[in-house]
Length: 313
Ligand code: PSU
Ligand code: MN
View 1 (cartoon, rainbow, N blue to C red):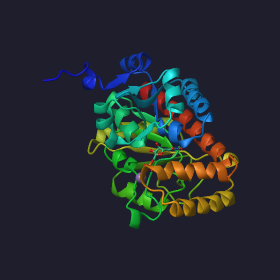
View 2: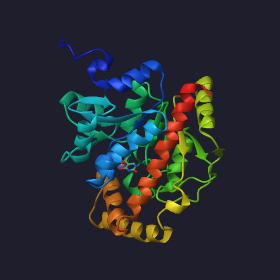
View 3: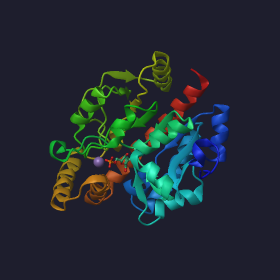
């Protein structure tokens, strides 16, 4: 029998020294995904953003753990040179949960999506995760059957994900339906409406409004106390109205982007990066600023929830 590398998950999961220490001490930690850096944001801004997001987590009093797979090892917490690889390595893969075993076995590298990051964070013992917008059910899903693996993973992973809703390139109503069916709890942070990623609201109502980070931590403790299937908690945190993308511009450029994707027959994993990239160009960078404003807010809030969760109040 071939002996594998070391201890924890055969050495396939490697927390950084800082993250390992924080885990041991029960200190607040916020997981961050890497696909937003590699495939969601344009270079060279993406590296600056990756560094800035980690800084925001620290300012909120938590330890950042950006997650990615490098040379077959799932790294939980990256140093500067590892962040540089994620931001700049040509042809870096986008890894969903299902890609992890193959990447590990074949020694491949890739950025992790919400599905892969949620899995790896929970596996490492991290409970809180911040991102921009979740993946979900795509428009035209009745034909393409394209539903992000993010939804499935969130229905069976005990993680709290702070996000600005789901990406507005999606069928938001259908996505919310799927989340209901799959038993994923959704709370709105100081809102009664599901956020619209680049937009403050998607116009869809949500049932549970919370006002403080402590209330999110309370829901997490109630999840654990109740038991049952290991599902996630979504904390939906809208981009401030003052920083949202102009809704008219959004709708117009998104319609163009969707038409271009159809014409160029973009499908599968490529479609989300294609649409996000089209929006950045089509809005002369305004969508990027709204995206970043949303992510920054989510990262800060996740840091506060992590602090409350660790304190036990
Ligand atoms: N949020 C962003 N930008 C992104 C993503 C999320 O602000 O690029 C990524 C996430 O990693 C998410 C993925 O998991 O897009 C969804 O891709 P797909 O639709 O192929 O499942
Ligand atoms: Mn997809």
